[in-house]
Image 1 (cartoon, helix red, strand yellow):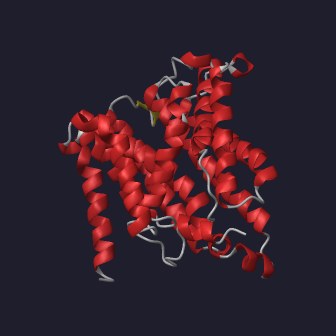
Image 2 (cartoon, one colour):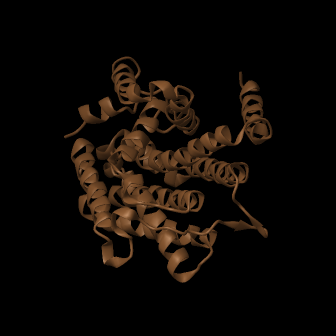
Image 3 (spheres, one colour):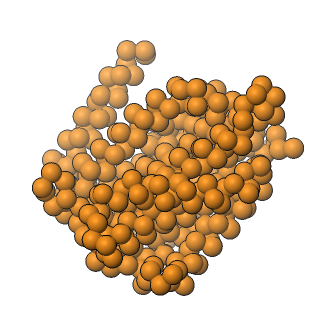
Length: 317
């Protein structure tokens, strides 16, 4: 079993790398959507899965990143991929500003605040914030990304850009998980009072988790803007945050492989069964109820296996 795991990882990576060679453009585009949601969910997993902080406003950070990239590209002609770190920085700083006053909240109290933040951002974008976000119509004419002199247009080309970012994220987050920072987040997630008692600066680690997770959402927003060439507030509504929350909980909060597996299930399967699209919300709701009753730790639980939304709510003081 110990030797089978690396083989399975290599096999999955090889199959993914070869996928654009035997799939059509539509199917590759679905994989691109799965990769984008995977990136977003990995960022949320850092906040929810690793640090145990409920965040239902992740789409707000996604929007800040996408709009930062779109404004810098369309108004100041900065190449879209160059805006990647700036979008992450903007989203991360925004997260620090909004999280600082509410970081002491726990469980569903924090959940409700983050829902409010998500809606405030969406409404601000609809009302053409500072005359730069284009109102309900959004921003058009975002340029295609260039990489090593090649213009990335086709889904097959975006596939390697997006999944390359996913692979880099997995590597970085695995390293982070094994670091002192990652262990402090896990300790905070399992028992905040004990963590505080042992000298861990819980406010600092909570803010750091929020800032880093939001920065990843911001960079995913840049890739989304580059892929679509047009963005509008409707792309960052409350439903997007619900889907991301669902992916992390379904996959197993704190487990990177589980989060990616859930991204395939939640984003990929509805595309295979498009004739039943109207029943999607019903199916998602039923799946979440069943998961919470029979397997609250998710499909692939994290190593500790203790964290779940149910256990966190029970522990709220």
